[in-house]
Image (cartoon, rainbow, N blue to C red):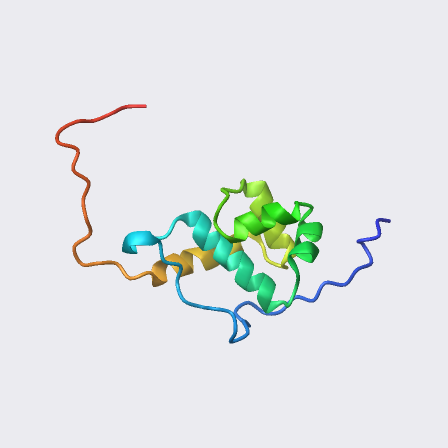
Length: 127
């Protein structure tokens, strides 16, 4: 049995975030909608802080490096689904819970009535 197997992890209900943790939607520069990685990172950070857990504790439970988890929380890295699932499990969430919370966060972002449309001057590029 591994030394981690006997460790108790305290899991709080979703949205039991202390008032010191910001709950405002993530804003992208220039008023644009935020990137998915920013939303997911914000959810991971809020859930970790709501559980009063350290980066080190969650990173060890998820079996990812502490600097990488920090980068995820700050929206600096695009994580694979496996890494996101591991981070979510370490916080007592399922991958669906994490994605649902990030989706809810995206829906809170105010959309302008006149969303800008891209103009390519008739030029299309194919990859």
